[in-house]
Amino acid sequence: MSLLCAITETLLANRKCFLYTICVTSLNRLVLIAWKGILLCCSDDILHLDGQMTDLIYTEKELVQSLREYIKAEESKLAAVKSWANKLDALTRVSTADPEGYLAHPVNAYKLMKRLNTEWSELESLVLQNPADGFVSNMSVHRQYFPDEEDETGAAKALMRLQDTYQLDSEAFSKGKLPGVHSSAVLTVDDCFDMGKTAYNDADYYHAVLWLQQALKQLDDGEEAVVSKADILDYLSYSVYQMGDLPRAIELTRRLVAIDPSHQRAGGNLRYFEQLLMKQLREMNQDYQPPSEEPIQLGTYSRPKDHLPERESYEALCRGEGIQMTEARRSRLFCRYHDGKRNPHLLLKPVKEEDEWDSPHIVRYLDLLSDEEIEKIKELAKPRLARATVRDPKTGVLTTANYRVSKSAWLEGEEDPVIDRVNQRIEAITGLTVETAELLQVANYGVGGQYEPHFDFSRKDEPDAFKRLGTGNRVATFLNYMSDVEAGGATVFPDFGAAIWPRKGTSVFWYNLFRSGEGDYRTRHAACPVLVGSKWVSNKWIHERGQEFRRPCGLTEVD
Image 1 (cartoon, rainbow, N blue to C red):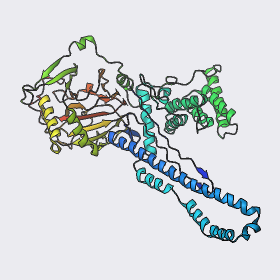
Image 2 (image 1 turned 180 degrees about the vertical axis):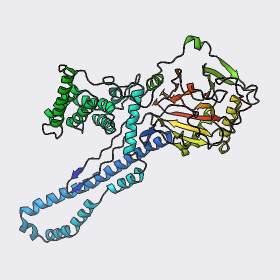
Image 3 (image 1 turned 135 degrees about the vertical axis):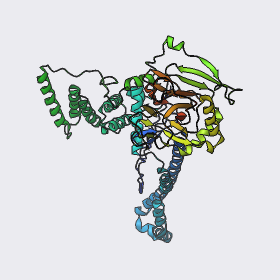
Image 4 (image 1 turned 90 degrees about the horizontal axis):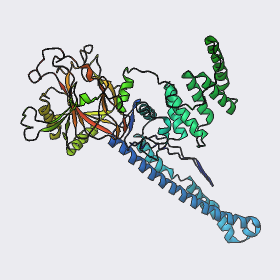
Protein backbone atom coordinates (compact mmCIF):
# COMPACT_ATOMS: atom_id res chain seq x y z
CA MET A 1 0.00 0.00 0.00
CA SER A 2 1.15 3.47 -0.67
CA LEU A 3 0.41 6.92 0.67
CA LEU A 4 1.89 9.14 -1.96
CA CYS A 5 0.38 12.21 -0.42
CA ALA A 6 2.25 15.26 -1.65
CA ILE A 7 1.25 18.57 -0.11
CA THR A 8 2.75 21.25 -2.37
CA GLU A 9 3.09 24.74 -1.01
CA THR A 10 4.60 27.56 -3.10
CA LEU A 11 5.45 30.76 -1.29
CA LEU A 12 7.03 33.71 -3.07
CA ALA A 13 8.57 35.90 -0.39
CA ASN A 14 8.78 39.71 -0.71
CA ARG A 15 12.19 40.61 -2.08
CA LYS A 16 13.83 43.99 -1.41
CA CYS A 17 16.62 44.94 -3.84
CA PHE A 18 18.95 47.92 -4.27
CA LEU A 19 17.24 50.97 -5.80
CA TYR A 20 13.92 49.19 -6.15
CA THR A 21 11.52 46.97 -4.31
CA ILE A 22 9.74 44.09 -5.90
CA CYS A 23 6.73 42.83 -4.04
CA VAL A 24 5.51 39.50 -5.26
CA THR A 25 2.07 38.50 -4.11
CA SER A 26 2.23 35.09 -2.54
CA LEU A 27 0.58 32.32 -4.43
CA ASN A 28 -2.59 31.08 -2.83
CA ARG A 29 -1.65 27.88 -1.13
CA LEU A 30 -2.32 25.07 -3.55
CA VAL A 31 -2.96 21.96 -1.50
CA LEU A 32 -2.85 18.98 -3.80
CA ILE A 33 -2.97 15.62 -2.05
CA ALA A 34 -1.72 13.60 -4.97
CA TRP A 35 -1.96 9.90 -4.27
CA LYS A 36 -0.64 8.43 -7.47
CA GLY A 37 -1.54 11.82 -8.93
CA ILE A 38 -5.28 11.24 -8.57
CA LEU A 39 -7.38 13.61 -6.57
CA LEU A 40 -9.71 16.43 -7.45
CA CYS A 41 -11.74 18.28 -4.89
CA CYS A 42 -15.31 19.37 -5.22
CA SER A 43 -18.11 20.49 -2.93
CA ASP A 44 -17.58 19.45 0.71
CA ASP A 45 -16.04 16.12 -0.26
CA ILE A 46 -13.37 15.26 -2.71
CA LEU A 47 -14.03 13.98 -6.18
CA HIS A 48 -11.50 12.26 -8.35
CA LEU A 49 -10.58 12.03 -11.99
CA ASP A 50 -7.27 10.85 -13.44
CA GLY A 51 -7.19 13.20 -16.44
CA GLN A 52 -8.18 16.36 -14.59
CA MET A 53 -5.70 15.75 -11.80
CA THR A 54 -2.95 14.98 -14.27
CA ASP A 55 -3.71 18.29 -15.97
CA LEU A 56 -3.18 20.06 -12.63
CA ILE A 57 0.18 18.34 -12.21
CA TYR A 58 1.35 19.61 -15.60
CA THR A 59 -0.16 23.04 -14.93
CA GLU A 60 1.94 23.29 -11.78
CA LYS A 61 5.04 22.22 -13.73
CA GLU A 62 4.37 24.96 -16.28
CA LEU A 63 3.96 27.53 -13.52
CA VAL A 64 7.26 26.46 -11.96
CA GLN A 65 8.97 26.99 -15.33
CA SER A 66 7.30 30.39 -15.61
CA LEU A 67 8.47 31.22 -12.11
CA ARG A 68 12.06 30.28 -12.98
CA GLU A 69 11.91 32.54 -16.05
CA TYR A 70 10.66 35.37 -13.85
CA ILE A 71 13.50 34.81 -11.36
CA LYS A 72 16.02 34.80 -14.22
CA ALA A 73 14.61 38.08 -15.52
CA GLU A 74 14.72 39.63 -12.05
CA GLU A 75 18.31 38.50 -11.57
CA SER A 76 19.28 39.93 -14.97
CA LYS A 77 17.62 43.22 -14.08
CA LEU A 78 19.27 43.29 -10.67
CA ALA A 79 22.68 42.58 -12.24
CA ALA A 80 22.22 45.53 -14.61
CA VAL A 81 21.20 47.83 -11.77
CA LYS A 82 24.20 46.68 -9.68
CA SER A 83 26.50 47.41 -12.62
CA TRP A 84 25.08 50.91 -12.83
CA ALA A 85 25.46 51.36 -9.08
CA ASN A 86 29.11 50.23 -9.10
CA LYS A 87 30.00 52.53 -11.99
CA LEU A 88 28.23 55.53 -10.48
CA ASP A 89 29.70 54.83 -7.06
CA ALA A 90 33.21 55.05 -8.53
CA LEU A 91 32.36 58.24 -10.41
CA THR A 92 30.82 59.99 -7.41
CA ARG A 93 33.81 59.14 -5.21
CA VAL A 94 36.07 60.95 -7.68
CA SER A 95 33.71 63.88 -8.32
CA THR A 96 32.96 64.58 -4.66
CA ALA A 97 36.62 64.43 -3.66
CA ASP A 98 37.25 67.73 -5.54
CA PRO A 99 34.02 69.00 -7.12
CA GLU A 100 35.56 72.19 -8.58
CA GLY A 101 38.59 70.43 -9.96
CA TYR A 102 36.36 67.68 -11.42
CA LEU A 103 34.05 70.16 -13.18
CA ALA A 104 37.01 72.18 -14.42
CA HIS A 105 37.49 69.55 -17.07
CA PRO A 106 34.93 70.14 -19.88
CA VAL A 107 34.50 66.43 -20.58
CA ASN A 108 33.49 65.79 -16.96
CA ALA A 109 31.01 68.66 -17.06
CA TYR A 110 29.50 67.31 -20.29
CA LYS A 111 29.24 63.76 -18.99
CA LEU A 112 27.58 64.95 -15.77
CA MET A 113 24.91 66.72 -17.81
CA LYS A 114 24.49 63.65 -20.02
CA ARG A 115 24.23 61.26 -17.09
CA LEU A 116 21.61 63.32 -15.28
CA ASN A 117 19.60 64.07 -18.40
CA THR A 118 19.80 60.76 -20.25
CA GLU A 119 21.46 57.90 -18.40
CA TRP A 120 19.63 58.29 -15.06
CA SER A 121 16.38 58.34 -17.05
CA GLU A 122 17.42 55.07 -18.68
CA LEU A 123 18.18 53.64 -15.27
CA GLU A 124 14.79 54.79 -14.02
CA SER A 125 13.13 53.01 -16.95
CA LEU A 126 15.10 49.85 -16.17
CA VAL A 127 14.02 49.91 -12.53
CA LEU A 128 10.40 50.50 -13.52
CA GLN A 129 10.37 47.43 -15.78
CA ASN A 130 8.33 44.62 -14.22
CA PRO A 131 9.59 41.15 -15.17
CA ALA A 132 6.71 39.71 -13.13
CA ASP A 133 4.15 40.66 -15.80
CA GLY A 134 4.64 37.42 -17.76
CA PHE A 135 4.46 35.26 -14.66
CA VAL A 136 1.38 37.07 -13.32
CA SER A 137 -0.30 36.74 -16.72
CA ASN A 138 0.43 33.00 -16.80
CA MET A 139 -0.94 32.66 -13.28
CA SER A 140 -4.13 34.46 -14.28
CA VAL A 141 -4.68 32.07 -17.18
CA HIS A 142 -4.32 28.97 -15.02
CA ARG A 143 -5.92 30.22 -11.82
CA GLN A 144 -9.42 29.36 -13.07
CA TYR A 145 -8.46 25.68 -12.91
CA PHE A 146 -7.00 25.83 -9.40
CA PRO A 147 -8.75 24.10 -6.51
CA ASP A 148 -10.35 26.65 -4.19
CA GLU A 149 -10.82 26.84 -0.42
CA GLU A 150 -13.86 24.58 -0.64
CA ASP A 151 -11.79 22.00 -2.50
CA GLU A 152 -9.04 22.14 0.11
CA THR A 153 -11.65 21.55 2.82
CA GLY A 154 -12.96 18.57 0.88
CA ALA A 155 -9.43 17.15 0.57
CA ALA A 156 -8.92 17.47 4.32
CA LYS A 157 -12.21 15.70 5.00
CA ALA A 158 -11.15 12.91 2.66
CA LEU A 159 -8.03 12.31 4.72
CA MET A 160 -10.17 12.17 7.86
CA ARG A 161 -12.53 9.70 6.17
CA LEU A 162 -9.60 7.44 5.34
CA GLN A 163 -8.24 7.90 8.84
CA ASP A 164 -11.52 6.67 10.33
CA THR A 165 -12.25 3.84 7.93
CA TYR A 166 -8.79 2.31 7.97
CA GLN A 167 -7.93 3.28 11.59
CA LEU A 168 -4.83 5.26 10.69
CA ASP A 169 -3.42 7.72 13.18
CA SER A 170 -2.46 11.30 12.38
CA GLU A 171 1.25 10.59 12.75
CA ALA A 172 1.07 7.93 10.03
CA PHE A 173 -0.41 10.49 7.67
CA SER A 174 1.96 13.27 8.70
CA LYS A 175 4.95 11.04 7.93
CA GLY A 176 3.41 9.69 4.72
CA LYS A 177 3.35 6.16 6.09
CA LEU A 178 1.02 3.30 5.50
CA PRO A 179 1.89 -0.33 6.24
CA GLY A 180 4.63 -1.42 3.86
CA VAL A 181 5.11 2.06 2.42
CA HIS A 182 8.01 4.48 2.69
CA SER A 183 7.20 7.83 1.12
CA SER A 184 8.81 11.26 1.14
CA ALA A 185 5.38 12.90 1.25
CA VAL A 186 4.91 14.52 4.65
CA LEU A 187 2.56 16.91 6.40
CA THR A 188 4.24 19.83 8.15
CA VAL A 189 3.18 21.44 11.42
CA ASP A 190 1.25 24.02 9.42
CA ASP A 191 -0.44 21.32 7.33
CA CYS A 192 -1.53 19.44 10.46
CA PHE A 193 -2.75 22.70 12.02
CA ASP A 194 -4.79 23.47 8.90
CA MET A 195 -6.28 19.96 9.00
CA GLY A 196 -7.26 20.48 12.65
CA LYS A 197 -8.65 23.94 11.95
CA THR A 198 -10.76 22.58 9.08
CA ALA A 199 -12.33 20.06 11.46
CA TYR A 200 -12.67 22.73 14.18
CA ASN A 201 -14.53 25.09 11.85
CA ASP A 202 -16.89 22.22 11.04
CA ALA A 203 -17.47 21.61 14.80
CA ASP A 204 -15.77 18.24 14.31
CA TYR A 205 -13.79 18.39 17.55
CA TYR A 206 -12.89 14.70 17.45
CA HIS A 207 -10.71 15.12 14.35
CA ALA A 208 -9.66 18.62 15.40
CA VAL A 209 -8.05 17.17 18.53
CA LEU A 210 -6.21 14.45 16.61
CA TRP A 211 -4.67 16.84 14.08
CA LEU A 212 -3.98 19.75 16.43
CA GLN A 213 -2.27 17.34 18.84
CA GLN A 214 -0.10 16.11 15.95
CA ALA A 215 0.78 19.71 15.04
CA LEU A 216 1.76 20.38 18.66
CA LYS A 217 3.84 17.19 18.83
CA GLN A 218 5.80 18.07 15.70
CA LEU A 219 6.33 21.62 16.95
CA ASP A 220 7.53 20.33 20.35
CA ASP A 221 9.92 18.04 18.49
CA GLY A 222 11.63 21.09 17.02
CA GLU A 223 10.04 21.37 13.58
CA GLU A 224 9.85 24.94 12.28
CA ALA A 225 6.46 26.40 11.48
CA VAL A 226 4.62 29.59 10.61
CA VAL A 227 1.84 28.90 13.09
CA SER A 228 2.66 29.68 16.71
CA LYS A 229 2.44 27.25 19.61
CA ALA A 230 -0.04 29.62 21.25
CA ASP A 231 -2.41 29.35 18.29
CA ILE A 232 -2.24 25.56 18.34
CA LEU A 233 -2.86 25.41 22.10
CA ASP A 234 -5.75 27.87 21.75
CA TYR A 235 -7.63 25.64 19.28
CA LEU A 236 -6.54 22.38 20.91
CA SER A 237 -7.55 23.30 24.46
CA TYR A 238 -11.04 24.32 23.40
CA SER A 239 -11.45 21.21 21.21
CA VAL A 240 -10.42 18.98 24.13
CA TYR A 241 -12.95 20.80 26.31
CA GLN A 242 -15.63 20.08 23.71
CA MET A 243 -14.67 16.40 23.90
CA GLY A 244 -15.48 16.53 27.63
CA ASP A 245 -11.91 16.22 28.93
CA LEU A 246 -11.78 19.15 31.38
CA PRO A 247 -8.54 18.16 33.21
CA ARG A 248 -6.60 18.03 29.95
CA ALA A 249 -8.27 21.22 28.68
CA ILE A 250 -7.12 22.99 31.87
CA GLU A 251 -3.57 21.67 31.51
CA LEU A 252 -3.38 22.82 27.85
CA THR A 253 -4.84 26.22 28.71
CA ARG A 254 -2.28 26.68 31.47
CA ARG A 255 0.45 26.02 28.93
CA LEU A 256 -1.14 28.67 26.71
CA VAL A 257 -1.24 31.23 29.55
CA ALA A 258 2.39 30.50 30.38
CA ILE A 259 3.39 31.18 26.77
CA ASP A 260 1.14 34.21 26.27
CA PRO A 261 -0.12 35.73 29.58
CA SER A 262 -1.93 38.50 27.66
CA HIS A 263 -3.92 36.12 25.44
CA GLN A 264 -7.41 37.57 25.14
CA ARG A 265 -9.29 34.30 25.76
CA ALA A 266 -6.92 32.05 27.64
CA GLY A 267 -7.34 33.57 31.10
CA GLY A 268 -11.11 33.59 30.92
CA ASN A 269 -11.24 30.07 29.52
CA LEU A 270 -8.93 28.79 32.26
CA ARG A 271 -11.09 30.25 35.04
CA TYR A 272 -14.24 28.87 33.39
CA PHE A 273 -12.78 25.39 32.91
CA GLU A 274 -11.51 25.25 36.52
CA GLN A 275 -14.86 26.39 37.94
CA LEU A 276 -16.73 23.91 35.78
CA LEU A 277 -14.46 21.05 36.84
CA MET A 278 -14.80 21.90 40.55
CA LYS A 279 -18.59 22.00 40.16
CA GLN A 280 -18.62 18.59 38.47
CA LEU A 281 -16.36 17.07 41.13
CA ARG A 282 -18.59 18.40 43.93
CA GLU A 283 -21.72 17.04 42.26
CA MET A 284 -20.12 13.61 41.85
CA ASN A 285 -18.37 13.77 45.24
CA GLN A 286 -15.03 12.98 43.66
CA ASP A 287 -11.47 14.22 44.18
CA TYR A 288 -9.51 15.99 41.47
CA GLN A 289 -7.53 13.65 39.24
CA PRO A 290 -4.69 15.13 37.18
CA PRO A 291 -4.95 14.65 33.42
CA SER A 292 -3.37 11.63 31.83
CA GLU A 293 0.24 12.13 30.76
CA GLU A 294 -0.34 9.86 27.77
CA PRO A 295 -0.43 11.86 24.52
CA ILE A 296 -3.74 12.20 22.71
CA GLN A 297 -3.92 9.65 19.92
CA LEU A 298 -6.35 7.51 17.98
CA GLY A 299 -8.58 5.86 20.57
CA THR A 300 -8.08 8.43 23.35
CA TYR A 301 -11.60 9.73 22.71
CA SER A 302 -14.61 7.88 21.36
CA ARG A 303 -15.57 8.78 17.84
CA PRO A 304 -19.03 10.41 17.77
CA LYS A 305 -21.87 8.38 16.31
CA ASP A 306 -23.29 9.53 13.00
CA HIS A 307 -26.27 8.83 10.73
CA LEU A 308 -25.07 5.39 9.66
CA PRO A 309 -26.23 2.57 11.98
CA GLU A 310 -23.85 -0.02 10.52
CA ARG A 311 -20.83 2.30 10.47
CA GLU A 312 -18.58 0.02 12.53
CA SER A 313 -19.36 -3.19 10.62
CA TYR A 314 -19.13 -1.38 7.27
CA GLU A 315 -15.69 0.08 8.04
CA ALA A 316 -14.47 -3.22 9.51
CA LEU A 317 -15.33 -4.96 6.24
CA CYS A 318 -13.48 -2.25 4.32
CA ARG A 319 -10.39 -3.17 6.36
CA GLY A 320 -10.93 -6.85 5.62
CA GLU A 321 -12.17 -7.57 9.13
CA GLY A 322 -15.40 -9.30 10.16
CA ILE A 323 -15.90 -11.16 6.88
CA GLN A 324 -18.38 -13.96 7.55
CA MET A 325 -16.88 -16.48 5.15
CA THR A 326 -16.90 -19.80 6.99
CA GLU A 327 -15.48 -23.09 5.77
CA ALA A 328 -19.02 -24.49 5.45
CA ARG A 329 -20.02 -21.55 3.28
CA ARG A 330 -16.82 -21.72 1.26
CA SER A 331 -17.51 -25.37 0.47
CA ARG A 332 -20.69 -24.30 -1.31
CA LEU A 333 -18.86 -21.93 -3.66
CA PHE A 334 -17.82 -23.17 -7.09
CA CYS A 335 -16.38 -21.95 -10.39
CA ARG A 336 -17.68 -22.96 -13.78
CA TYR A 337 -17.99 -22.03 -17.43
CA HIS A 338 -21.24 -20.19 -18.12
CA ASP A 339 -22.90 -20.16 -21.55
CA GLY A 340 -26.06 -18.23 -20.62
CA LYS A 341 -28.26 -21.30 -21.05
CA ARG A 342 -26.77 -21.99 -24.48
CA ASN A 343 -26.94 -18.39 -25.62
CA PRO A 344 -25.52 -18.19 -29.19
CA HIS A 345 -23.14 -15.41 -28.15
CA LEU A 346 -21.55 -17.65 -25.52
CA LEU A 347 -21.64 -21.12 -27.04
CA LEU A 348 -18.19 -20.95 -28.60
CA LYS A 349 -16.67 -18.88 -25.82
CA PRO A 350 -18.44 -19.29 -22.49
CA VAL A 351 -17.45 -16.95 -19.67
CA LYS A 352 -15.69 -18.00 -16.49
CA GLU A 353 -18.05 -17.70 -13.53
CA GLU A 354 -17.06 -17.82 -9.85
CA ASP A 355 -19.33 -17.85 -6.83
CA GLU A 356 -18.49 -14.96 -4.49
CA TRP A 357 -21.31 -15.62 -2.00
CA ASP A 358 -23.94 -18.28 -1.60
CA SER A 359 -26.95 -16.44 -0.12
CA PRO A 360 -27.75 -14.00 -1.53
CA HIS A 361 -26.08 -15.43 -4.60
CA ILE A 362 -23.30 -13.15 -5.90
CA VAL A 363 -21.16 -14.23 -8.82
CA ARG A 364 -18.05 -12.85 -10.46
CA TYR A 365 -17.30 -13.16 -14.19
CA LEU A 366 -13.63 -13.24 -15.20
CA ASP A 367 -12.04 -11.61 -18.25
CA LEU A 368 -15.31 -9.92 -19.12
CA LEU A 369 -13.83 -6.64 -20.36
CA SER A 370 -10.61 -6.39 -22.34
CA ASP A 371 -8.06 -3.65 -21.70
CA GLU A 372 -8.98 -2.09 -25.04
CA GLU A 373 -12.68 -2.01 -24.15
CA ILE A 374 -11.92 -0.50 -20.75
CA GLU A 375 -9.80 2.26 -22.26
CA LYS A 376 -12.51 3.03 -24.82
CA ILE A 377 -15.19 3.26 -22.13
CA LYS A 378 -12.99 5.57 -20.06
CA GLU A 379 -12.20 7.67 -23.13
CA LEU A 380 -15.90 8.15 -23.86
CA ALA A 381 -16.74 8.87 -20.22
CA LYS A 382 -13.96 11.28 -19.21
CA PRO A 383 -15.26 14.39 -20.99
CA ARG A 384 -18.67 13.95 -19.33
CA LEU A 385 -17.71 12.92 -15.82
CA ALA A 386 -19.58 14.98 -13.25
CA ARG A 387 -20.40 14.67 -9.56
CA ALA A 388 -22.20 11.37 -9.08
CA THR A 389 -25.86 11.62 -8.10
CA VAL A 390 -28.41 9.53 -6.25
CA ARG A 391 -32.12 9.37 -6.90
CA ASP A 392 -34.19 11.28 -4.34
CA PRO A 393 -36.54 8.64 -2.87
CA LYS A 394 -39.45 11.09 -2.58
CA THR A 395 -39.23 12.94 -5.90
CA GLY A 396 -37.32 10.50 -8.09
CA VAL A 397 -35.04 13.37 -9.17
CA LEU A 398 -31.28 12.81 -9.36
CA THR A 399 -29.33 14.87 -6.82
CA THR A 400 -25.86 14.91 -5.22
CA ALA A 401 -25.32 13.51 -1.73
CA ASN A 402 -22.41 13.68 0.73
CA TYR A 403 -22.46 9.92 1.23
CA ARG A 404 -21.63 9.33 -2.43
CA VAL A 405 -18.28 10.76 -3.45
CA SER A 406 -17.33 9.95 -7.02
CA LYS A 407 -17.69 11.23 -10.56
CA SER A 408 -19.87 9.49 -13.09
CA ALA A 409 -21.07 9.61 -16.67
CA TRP A 410 -23.80 7.79 -18.58
CA LEU A 411 -23.11 6.13 -21.96
CA GLU A 412 -25.65 5.03 -24.57
CA GLY A 413 -25.24 1.90 -26.65
CA GLU A 414 -25.61 3.89 -29.88
CA GLU A 415 -22.57 6.02 -29.08
CA ASP A 416 -19.95 3.39 -29.82
CA PRO A 417 -19.85 -0.29 -30.82
CA VAL A 418 -17.95 -1.08 -27.60
CA ILE A 419 -20.84 0.15 -25.42
CA ASP A 420 -23.36 -1.77 -27.49
CA ARG A 421 -21.20 -4.89 -27.31
CA VAL A 422 -20.91 -4.64 -23.51
CA ASN A 423 -24.68 -4.22 -23.19
CA GLN A 424 -25.32 -7.28 -25.34
CA ARG A 425 -22.75 -9.26 -23.36
CA ILE A 426 -24.55 -8.41 -20.12
CA GLU A 427 -27.87 -9.52 -21.62
CA ALA A 428 -26.38 -12.78 -22.88
CA ILE A 429 -24.79 -13.60 -19.52
CA THR A 430 -27.71 -12.68 -17.26
CA GLY A 431 -30.53 -13.79 -19.54
CA LEU A 432 -32.26 -10.47 -18.74
CA THR A 433 -33.20 -7.86 -21.31
CA VAL A 434 -31.28 -4.61 -21.19
CA GLU A 435 -33.86 -2.82 -23.34
CA THR A 436 -35.44 -1.42 -20.16
CA ALA A 437 -32.16 -1.08 -18.25
CA GLU A 438 -30.57 2.24 -17.39
CA LEU A 439 -27.68 3.50 -19.49
CA LEU A 440 -24.22 2.18 -18.71
CA GLN A 441 -22.95 4.28 -15.82
CA VAL A 442 -19.21 4.88 -15.56
CA ALA A 443 -17.83 6.04 -12.21
CA ASN A 444 -14.40 7.06 -11.01
CA TYR A 445 -13.51 6.95 -7.32
CA GLY A 446 -10.15 8.52 -6.48
CA VAL A 447 -8.48 8.61 -3.09
CA GLY A 448 -11.21 8.99 -0.47
CA GLY A 449 -13.95 8.28 -3.04
CA GLN A 450 -16.76 6.20 -1.60
CA TYR A 451 -20.45 5.32 -1.66
CA GLU A 452 -21.76 4.59 1.83
CA PRO A 453 -24.19 1.70 2.48
CA HIS A 454 -27.26 1.97 0.27
CA PHE A 455 -29.85 -0.06 -1.62
CA ASP A 456 -29.86 -0.12 -5.42
CA PHE A 457 -33.61 -0.82 -5.46
CA SER A 458 -36.40 1.46 -4.25
CA ARG A 459 -38.20 0.53 -1.03
CA LYS A 460 -41.93 0.61 -0.36
CA ASP A 461 -41.65 4.07 1.19
CA GLU A 462 -40.10 5.31 -2.08
CA PRO A 463 -42.83 4.52 -4.62
CA ASP A 464 -41.83 7.31 -7.00
CA ALA A 465 -38.09 6.61 -7.14
CA PHE A 466 -38.16 5.20 -10.69
CA LYS A 467 -41.61 6.38 -11.72
CA ARG A 468 -40.24 8.68 -14.40
CA LEU A 469 -38.44 5.79 -16.08
CA GLY A 470 -41.59 3.69 -16.31
CA THR A 471 -39.59 0.47 -16.18
CA GLY A 472 -40.28 -0.71 -12.65
CA ASN A 473 -37.74 -1.33 -9.93
CA ARG A 474 -34.06 -2.27 -10.26
CA VAL A 475 -34.20 -6.04 -10.35
CA ALA A 476 -30.44 -6.64 -10.63
CA THR A 477 -27.01 -4.97 -10.61
CA PHE A 478 -24.17 -5.81 -12.99
CA LEU A 479 -20.94 -4.16 -11.83
CA ASN A 480 -17.78 -4.05 -13.97
CA TYR A 481 -14.40 -3.39 -12.35
CA MET A 482 -12.27 -1.43 -14.81
CA SER A 483 -9.14 -1.03 -12.68
CA ASP A 484 -7.19 -2.67 -9.93
CA VAL A 485 -7.02 -0.70 -6.68
CA GLU A 486 -3.82 -0.77 -4.67
CA ALA A 487 -5.59 -0.39 -1.32
CA GLY A 488 -9.21 0.04 -0.28
CA GLY A 489 -12.14 0.34 -2.65
CA ALA A 490 -13.86 -2.96 -1.82
CA THR A 491 -17.58 -3.53 -2.40
CA VAL A 492 -18.97 -4.67 0.95
CA PHE A 493 -22.29 -6.04 2.17
CA PRO A 494 -22.60 -5.25 5.92
CA ASP A 495 -25.79 -7.29 6.40
CA PHE A 496 -24.12 -10.64 5.79
CA GLY A 497 -20.42 -9.70 6.08
CA ALA A 498 -19.13 -9.99 2.53
CA ALA A 499 -16.29 -8.02 0.93
CA ILE A 500 -15.59 -8.16 -2.80
CA TRP A 501 -12.31 -6.68 -3.96
CA PRO A 502 -11.85 -4.95 -7.34
CA ARG A 503 -10.08 -6.96 -10.04
CA LYS A 504 -9.62 -5.29 -13.39
CA GLY A 505 -11.65 -6.81 -16.21
CA THR A 506 -13.98 -8.78 -13.93
CA SER A 507 -17.66 -8.18 -13.17
CA VAL A 508 -19.98 -9.09 -10.32
CA PHE A 509 -23.72 -9.68 -10.53
CA TRP A 510 -26.51 -10.00 -8.00
CA TYR A 511 -30.30 -9.71 -7.82
CA ASN A 512 -31.74 -6.84 -5.78
CA LEU A 513 -35.30 -8.25 -5.86
CA PHE A 514 -36.73 -11.64 -5.10
CA ARG A 515 -38.75 -13.28 -7.88
CA SER A 516 -41.88 -11.93 -6.18
CA GLY A 517 -40.71 -8.37 -6.77
CA GLU A 518 -40.02 -7.82 -3.08
CA GLY A 519 -36.73 -6.17 -2.26
CA ASP A 520 -33.90 -8.26 -0.85
CA TYR A 521 -32.78 -6.04 2.02
CA ARG A 522 -29.66 -8.13 2.49
CA THR A 523 -28.20 -6.51 -0.65
CA ARG A 524 -27.54 -3.17 1.08
CA HIS A 525 -23.95 -2.52 0.06
CA ALA A 526 -21.22 0.11 -0.06
CA ALA A 527 -18.18 1.15 -2.05
CA CYS A 528 -15.36 1.55 0.50
CA PRO A 529 -13.13 4.63 0.34
CA VAL A 530 -10.15 4.26 -1.97
CA LEU A 531 -7.03 4.38 0.18
CA VAL A 532 -4.38 4.20 -2.52
CA GLY A 533 -4.94 4.44 -6.26
CA SER A 534 -7.98 5.08 -8.41
CA LYS A 535 -11.05 2.93 -8.88
CA TRP A 536 -12.91 2.83 -12.19
CA VAL A 537 -16.18 0.93 -12.47
CA SER A 538 -19.13 0.77 -14.81
CA ASN A 539 -22.50 -0.68 -13.93
CA LYS A 540 -25.78 -1.64 -15.51
CA TRP A 541 -28.93 -1.41 -13.44
CA ILE A 542 -31.43 -3.84 -14.94
CA HIS A 543 -35.13 -3.10 -14.40
CA GLU A 544 -38.23 -5.26 -13.96
CA ARG A 545 -40.09 -4.47 -17.16
CA GLY A 546 -39.40 -7.00 -19.91
CA GLN A 547 -38.25 -9.70 -17.50
CA GLU A 548 -41.72 -11.25 -16.99
CA PHE A 549 -40.86 -14.37 -19.02
CA ARG A 550 -37.11 -14.26 -18.48
CA ARG A 551 -37.37 -14.36 -14.68
CA PRO A 552 -40.92 -15.42 -13.78
CA CYS A 553 -42.38 -15.02 -10.30
CA GLY A 554 -41.74 -17.66 -7.64
CA LEU A 555 -44.28 -19.35 -5.42
CA THR A 556 -43.33 -17.46 -2.24
CA GLU A 557 -42.40 -13.91 -1.35
CA VAL A 558 -38.72 -14.75 -0.94
CA ASP A 559 -38.13 -17.17 -3.82
